[in-house]
Image 1 (cartoon, protein in one colour):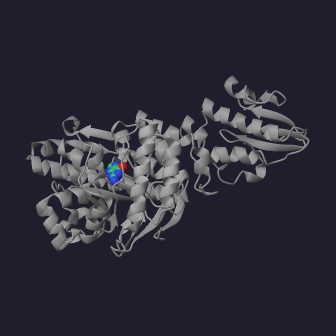
Image 2: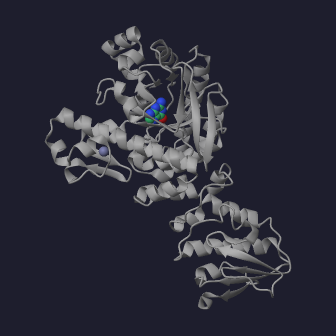
Amino acid sequence: MREVFEVTAQDGAARIGELEVPRAGVTVETPTLMPVVNPNLITVEPSRFPEFGAEMLITNSYIINNDPDLHERAREEGLHEMLGFDGAIMTDSGSFQLAEYGEIETTTEEILQFQHDVGSDIGTPVDIPTPPDASREQAEEELATTQERLELAETVDVGDMLVNAPVQGATYPDLREEAARHAYNTDLDLFPVGAVVPMMNQYRYDDVAETVLAAKRGLGRDAPVHLFGAGHPMMFALAAALGCDLLDSAAYAIYARDDRYLTVHGTEHLDSLHYFPCECPVCTDHTPDEVERMGDAAREELLAEHNLHVSFGELRRVKQAIKSGNLMELVEARAHAHPRTLDGFRALLDHSEQLEQTDPASKDAFFYTSADSARRPEVVRHHRRLERLSPEGDVLLTEGSGNDRFDEWWNVLPPFGPYPRSLSTTYPLTAETPDRMDRAGYEAAADGVAALAEANPDTEFTLAHRGWPDSALDRVPARVETVDISAED
Ligand code: GUN
Ligand code: ZN
């Protein structure tokens, strides 16, 4: 692996990075979104992509290689001139066609050489995208083939073209992790998580989350990770939170083709829109009625333009959130707009320990916005920290004020639980939490009390709480005395 990727900011597993693409002579800021260009079906001219914010595109070298006319032009002009795009160009290999049609007529050596010859900046070998839910046997066999192809790719002389090392393994987390470790140990440069398109088409965002996090466990932090086929803006915040650095969108064009309008919450059909819920130039200059009455080509182009605007707008929002340290708030907001993204978010939270490892110690205030916030990495980290603290004597843990009868008194804040008062101005205990806390927040706080009590068996604890529900109090060890102080307010 060449050193082409540098992480410059981190929030949980998400990061802002700089990807150097030597052959294109550019450095691309990540997370980045690559519009997919089907050279036979151009909806928006690639020369216009920079208007939307695209620094990179992805196209399919297999389609170009197999079309006599495109093949000829690509060889003569090179991809950059043929497509009219100066930025970085990534090329895919035909693996997706392999997955769709069962066979293709090319090999890793041939297609990598072709990608190199037509001026691709980042090439791809012929990996095997094993579909989700394939048998373990099939997943293992196909992964072994993919691994051979990656090793073969290492031996092809492609100059300064970067090369993808796709990570396969279907829905088996241990295979994904092993595949990732193997890929990371090759000389190849970028690490797409493959065969997630069928999962995304079925909105199985929880499986996507499990799959990406498994791959991440096998990759070093300096590995740029691409989520192959992730093009719907409703999942960009989640994809970034999973630690993906590159995304690609065919959706902007495919959806436009049948009058579908992307939003950060889902997809709308043009004929159901009375108003355009968007600030982009297309949506401010036109009404849905006008667009509906246009000819097919004009309508498709405008919808594709909107789809690109909304996608790059969301990408900027995601990047700003990573810099501010509030990406989790954005993921949570997006998650709660759609039951399927909610599943993805909850699968992400199942791995809060993993996210916590790269979460900065200090950020902007933590906002508690739903019961799911109680499972965020900051809460997990606080509970672990409690196990290392040792208050002594007779200790009051209180949501109210102190009392001289005790040797020490600590504050209590759901969902975190108890904390020494000296930490009250320290992240994440500066959190904004609702006055009407939910059950999950109290229960998490009770887990914090339990962690502290278990770590300090010789200390006496009294918990002064404001009307915690029984489901929370049941999690507090019996030896902790509890007092309800809600009547005192
Ligand atoms: N495009 C979408 N998924 C895949 C994949 O798994 N491999 C390759 N090479 N391209 C893809
Ligand atoms: Zn718009």
